[in-house]
Length: 371
Image (cartoon, rainbow, N blue to C red; front, side, top):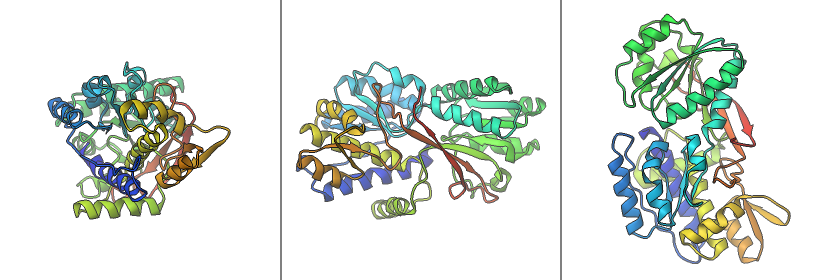
């Protein structure tokens, strides 16, 4: 998932810079420490980073990016009464995790993404669908929901699991191609860079691919870039304005000296930080207990509340004695009792002949619930 790091890092820096420019939280500047989360094969890295965060008395932990990694550290973080907010966890079972009310996420559960992915495949007239998925928490959760929607819609579904970080897809591709599907939904992370060329070698039509947030990437530098022309993919979040993209790109360039080319989950990361900061300001308490107490309240609308879209506006309203409702860049982010955003969006994109998708948003589907 390393391709998701740049936009998430940009979102962290942009949010913290804006908060501090407005005067900070409770009059104090926010400090930001970024640590490696590793991946599903290196869970000890995430554990070390979580331990370091707690030892430094972090008020809030943003992350991890992967649901499987979060599972390995959520008990440690929330058990210490520190709020954890992930910008990109989508596994459905995290909704009911026994976290004491300290876990939140700004990305919707795959109960929403899977439903929209399945419906899009059906709307495209696909009747014989193969789902090739990673045998991990992310892959199993998204596959289950997508397959259920497809089956209910009358499609024939065949599923093929592979081990996380798999590099040889020859045998799976042989089985898939033999079934003659009219669509392949590939649920993976970076393994897509191995799976896609394996399908290309067997002559499968690349325009019949459906990708998901874990592998919806800019493939313009890959040898199979043009092969994906016409393929579609889903990504949580609504269309980002050119202005917000420019802000992310500028802060990333300033902090790292590198050019930002991906924007996935940048908005969700930005929103996670602002929600925590506004909650702490509202509670007059920047501890995990204080943030937990107010974060759901400041995310919800209601009579007598002032809608705000920035920390500066929220700070002014709270100092004036008003109650606020933060609406984010990624969406309204209205948390339910499980810390899930009930008002969410999924964008559906199409790849062009250059292997790029970000400038070709087909539509955005709104989901009022993730259940």
